[in-house]
Image (spheres, rainbow, N blue to C red):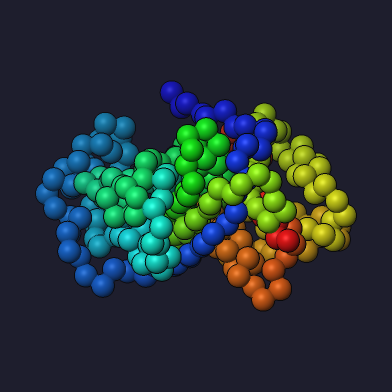
Length: 284
């Protein structure tokens, strides 16, 4: 049975700002410090796939980019020095090595020994849900700094049907650092998620999020909203083949641009769950 976290339609009580971001696309690891083709891992995947009659691909268990490795490299890029209170990993496709826990590793190496956990089984909504949970922690648990890591890797040692919109073309990861601020401010981050949205409603509901003339908004639509180009709105099309990281890499790039847009809406729609997600970043 799949348990879906009910999305909240209300913005979090805490005011947030985007304090940092890093994005990477990963090639093959230079070497295998811990070869994944170890007998225990081969047996694990063979037994797991055999339980469900799914063909097993032992030939693929070679030098994967694990979530742990990608997270460590992103943390180097971020150069975090201040303590982090909560860190969340978001993914639609699974990690490659069951021997490693990226969450446990984050709790150990991120400054502040943060509360760390993962969000999955949310499809395209996973990074939005992770960011919303971080915001809720700041609103209710007194947290000041949060870290969200969106991850995707391609190694699947068994044949299974991954919906095309969720299948990554390569290994990639994005890290976002958010900080709580006092009161409300025009320069901030807000996440909204709406459930029970039928595919035919997604565009109309998203356009209702503008809250002003379309020309004042820069839209970054994810795979679930591909082709959406509202009249008058500036649209940034994220890199293809990056279902969980593409829009966040584009968002980070937009926020680092010399002429930063005043309002950016990163949005996606997960049709299997009927969840429309919107992350709005505003700049004074």
